[in-house]
Image 1 (cartoon, helix red, strand yellow):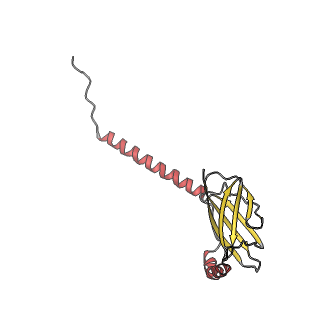
Image 2 (spheres, rainbow, N blue to C red):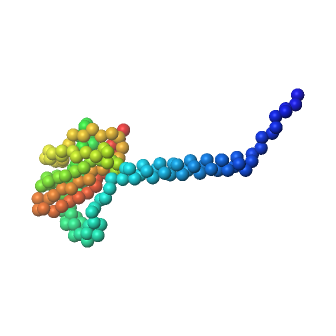
Image 3 (cartoon, one colour):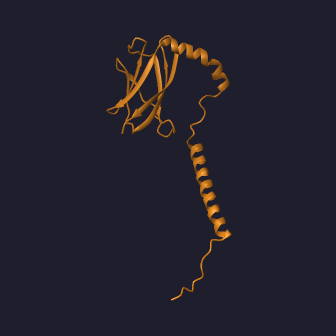
Length: 156
């Protein structure tokens, strides 16, 4: 028995279609990732970077003079924010404003109602596993502003 089918050849047209298809997939994925990145960008951190830069050193010096350390933890449906002085004693601030959210998107952002319990600031919050950030702004009793981004990792 003989095979009467003509042998198929890989021609220049086939090569063009393979390379064209591969580049189309690469460009399509790049466009999809770029659109996703732009959609999830939370926006500006400061209105004027020049003004923020001019004030940075004086704010940093005042904040460092407080000698505060901040540690965040989560468990049992609570988020705990411990602010301590240079001697390790708990600090009760004049005011505390904090936003709890993911580092990469703003859709999960929340503003927990932190209450001082005598040793730390505690707020109810059920957090999914992963990396979280607490962007906090506290005011000391003398009026000094203390800002910090505290990383919180929640185990799954």
